[in-house]
Length: 158
Image (cartoon, rainbow, N blue to C red; front, top):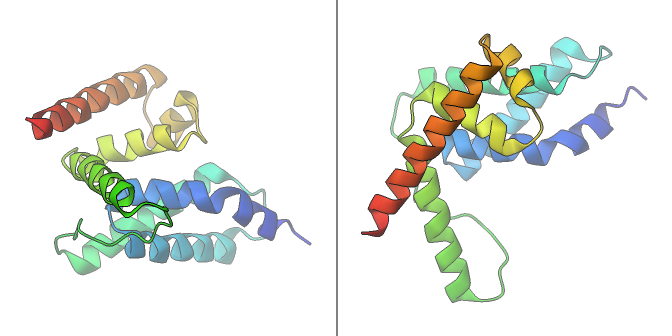
């Protein structure tokens, strides 16, 4: 066994969360998750299983999709969560959509970097290597992106 199953189980949920933050679309994120692992295993099976490479492949899969589609993403997607209270479920979905909408207002690079940080799988140094910039630059970009998100969410409350 080459450990592919374990690698998939370890990274699928975090990669899916990253893709959700990048796209705001539940079904598209699932499709891109599948495409990312397929590409990863097609080209890198049997080699060292590198999560940074998997995320880079996922980002490229998203870019490929956007090039093919070039249409607006629908943030009103019904997300199938199993919460016991319907009112609480509605509140959570609305807040989730607000955050996703705010993320969508960031530039693609800032959204990518912030999504990687929020994922929790990579440190600033890893993200700097993935994006070809410095660790300090990543910290500044993350701080600024968080401030923009905070401002957008606060403006939406008024």
